[in-house]
Image 1: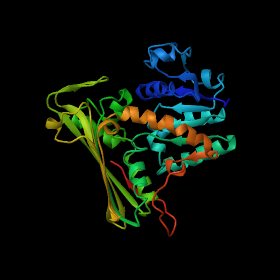
Image 2 (image 1 turned 90 degrees about the horizontal axis):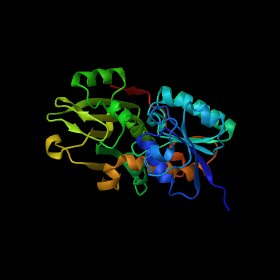
Image 3 (image 1 turned 30 degrees about the vertical axis):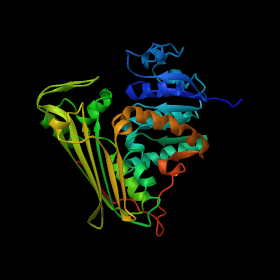
Length: 355
């Protein structure tokens, strides 16, 4: 009988709970530990915390050493943060215990700028310990990057790429609400953008990966963000937003090559959207201008239930990661087909303008 993959769930919020639920349907996996810093969860059974309606006999614990230092595991699902500065020390502690990692830290999806240095350190540590690390998700991780990358396979050449995502952020937990500025005043949103703490994390990384895989030789990325304000107020499972407060955001990234805009990626995120009030249509769309050109449209479940999709991508990545070589992997190195971009090697993006 093949040995089961022993998994620790690190972070049991909205995303982590979905991962625990999904793992119950995977006979190849055995959940052996759980970590979370929330005092309301520490000491409780993981099945109860994750909303399974049954006990699993696994206690949620903190600090992490209580699990990492005592529980034998093959892999950790890290669902704690979008930011590399927060995820990096967690990742290094896990690697020290010789455990593989699948994380949903968006900044690590396709490392840019200062994140690239930390990614190289993670790669070095992972290789030393003979284990593997990757960062995945639904966006970044599938909708706006992996889908157009895979759809580039029939193309002979590519000139421009456009992508747009309009999504309901209602199912996401408190951490994601803080990231998108839900409930803030418009002025607080603008200040949060200036401070670098407001906005969807990963759109820059998504654009950069698509440009890299499609051989577009992008040398500059420009990002802008603006708030969406609700006139009547609205609620979700995790937040109530009053009238005149921020209920969502519009975020754009353009990719330039020698000053010419050849990539345009737009994202609109709304808490509990009202189509008439918000003036947008839910769903995802991408277009590849080339030979041949490709149009891609995604709606319904996979588009609007991103929380479930994030868990699905994370769990489904486990066997691919375990089969890969030791080190840090981005999703395009885990056996992903895309346009064969011949010619000179891709060079690092020289300039990234954040807002």
